[in-house]
Image 1 (tube, rainbow, N blue to C red):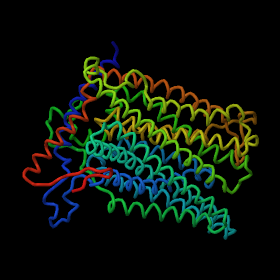
Image 2 (cartoon, rainbow, N blue to C red):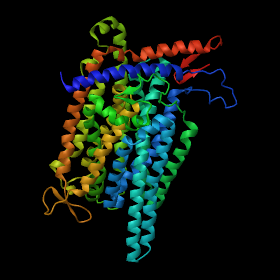
Image 3 (cartoon, helix red, strand yellow):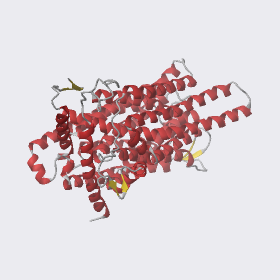
Image 4 (cartoon, one colour):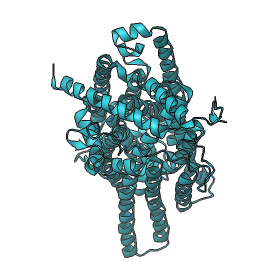
Length: 572
C-alpha cells in the first residue's frame, strides 16, 4: 500500500532469518553445563552462561549504576559550576555520544562482547568525571592567586580539560549504553529460557530491576554533593575527587565480578542468511553502521525517534536552564547547594516508578501469555497471540504517560517564565514529573526496544543513543545560543548578564512531546501488523527453548546429572 508497508515486509522477512539464526546460535552457545569444568583454566572458564543469571545481572547493574551515577551527578552540576563552559561541555558530550553510536559502538560490542564493551565505556567515563576534579582543583588554585593573567590561563586550561573529558566520555557513553542494551537482552533471554517464560516477561522484569538500581544509586550520588556541602566537611574538589574514585573502582570490578556472555557476532552462519542489502552481517562495515541500517530498513525505528528526542530535549532543559538559571534565583542558591537535593528527587521518583512500571508490564505480559495458552488454537487462526496486539498495551500506555510527564516539566515555564515566581513546592512538582518520565525512558522504553528489535539488539540500542544524544546536544546548545536583545517576558537575563530567548526551546520541547506520542502509536501499529503477518515471531522464545533443551540432552549424553532450577539459577 505504501513504501512503509513494503519496508515492513522486507523487515519481516529479514527478522525471520535473523530469528532462525539467533535460535541456532543460542542453541549452540547457551549450554549450561560442561563436564570438563574442573580444567586447568578453572571452574568458571568453561561455563558459557552464569549459574545465576538474575544475580549476575544485578551485580552488573550495581557496578554500571555506580559509574554512571557519578557521571549524571557531574552533568547536573556542569552549568551551575562551569557556567557556559559547562553547557557547551554537555552539548559536546552528547554529540560525541551520538556519533560513537553510529561510528564504532556497535562494532565494538559485536566484536569484543557486551561485558568487555561495558568495561571500556566505563573506563572512558572516568576521564569525563575526572575533568570536573581538574576544574575544581584549578578553581582552588586560582582563588589563592590574585594574578589576572594566571586566572585567564587557568580558565583556558579548565575549558580544555572540560571539552576533552566530554569528547572521551561521549565515546565511552556510546559504547556503554549500546553494550548495556545488548547485555540486558542476553540476560533476559537467558533468564527466560531457564524458567520457561516469555522473553517479554523477563525483559519487563529486568528493566524494572535495572532502572530501580540505576536510579537509586544515582539518587545517593546526587545527594552526596549536597550532604557534604551542607555539613561543610568537603570542598567541591574533594567531592569531584570522590566521584572520580567511585568511577575507577566500579570500572575495575566489572571484568572481575560480571559474567562475559559470548559475543553476538555469529561468524559461522550461512552467508545467505547473514546478508542485509548486500552487506554481509559479518563484515566490519556492517557492524560499524548497523544502527544506520536499522534506522533505514525497519520502518518502526523512525517512529520511535520522538520518544528518545523528548527525553533528550527535556533533560537538557532541566539540567542546563532550570538547574543553572531558575533554581539559583528561585531558592536563592548561588552556591548550587540545593541542586543535588532536587536532582536526587528525580532519581527517587524514577526509581520507585520504575519498579511499579516494571511490575505492571511484567504482570500484563504474564496474564497475556496465560490467556494465549488457553486459547492457542484461536490465536493461531487469527494470527494474533497477545491481547495487547489490539492496542498499545500496558507498555505503550506507560510510554505515553512518560511523554506527557516530560511535557509537564516544560509547560510551567511557558506559562510563567519568571524564575523568582517559583519556590520549593512548584520545583518539587517539576522535578517529580521529570522523574516519572525518566522511569519510562530508563526502563519501559528499553524493554520495548528489546521486544520490537530483538533481531538486532546492538543496532536498536545504538539508535537510542544516537537519537537521544543528538536531541540532548542540540538542547544544551540552544539553552545558551538562543539570544535576544531587549528584555521581555520571554527574553530572560542569565546569571552571566546575557539575554536569552527561552520560549523557542520550550516550544521545541513541547512539540517533541506530540511527535513522541504520535510516532509511538504508528510504530505500535506497524508492530501489530508484523505480528499478524508473521505469527512465528511470537513463538520464537518457545522454539528457542525447545532447541536448547534438545541440545542439552545430546551434550549431556550419559552423564547422570540432575538439574534443578530455583529462583536464582541452576544448581546440581
